[in-house]
Length: 345
Image (cartoon, rainbow, N blue to C red):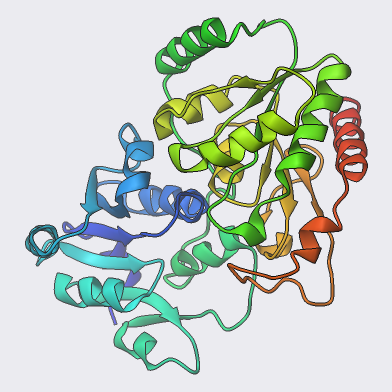
């Protein structure tokens, strides 16, 4: 066992492995901030899947991004880059592949998840028991607590420069004819899984209600979500404005310039929080206890039908009752209520 004094003054680097979705990566940013505080002079490298890398291109707490792409040559390149260069590995996903990278790095200290029913965790030198489900931010922070570190924050954050935010704002406000002095609500109706995608016709009705109430409304979506966006536009009685698919970093900048994002549980929810924008989330098959770890109403709010069968975390469902139970008026009134509370605490 390495003593704490030598642990935090190691001349070698620190490797953080956090692949998976954009939201998962954003929820680990408080852990990254804590690691940087304790290892001020060590090189901090972050292993990510392709979609998330651009969010950390100007992050002051990350010295190097190691991107995981498809193909054996990329994997071989990653192994060469990490072999023998790190004193500590924080494996924040603990999949067979991340365990493989942790072990091949040669780091003497390897922190990773342990489930009683899964033997893989026994290959880490410092195991973190994750048998108990807790909010995702706290779950990630268990890794640093395992080495005696005290978290410096529980707030998610993505670093964007004022210059790039202003550039994106100017570009898309002009394109979409948005007025800066009037409130803007963005609606993101898409999601890869149907069990986490509120009905397009209800997003359309909600958009219409806010338009009638005097808000500017913008529908957003990625290239993979254009079909859902088109359904929302067809169901709407208003001529809704649509932000065309943009890069992830531009999307983050755009979200930072609106007053509220209404979305399903997913990456945009956490990206909105990471840039300081209030967020309202509709939850279906997932548990808001784990995936909405934010202050209500200061940061936003959510709605959840809380059926006996939920949360189930399924990707497909024949009934989708958990989403059908959530009515437009319920969402509208809850949003108006939390906006009133946040404006008049």
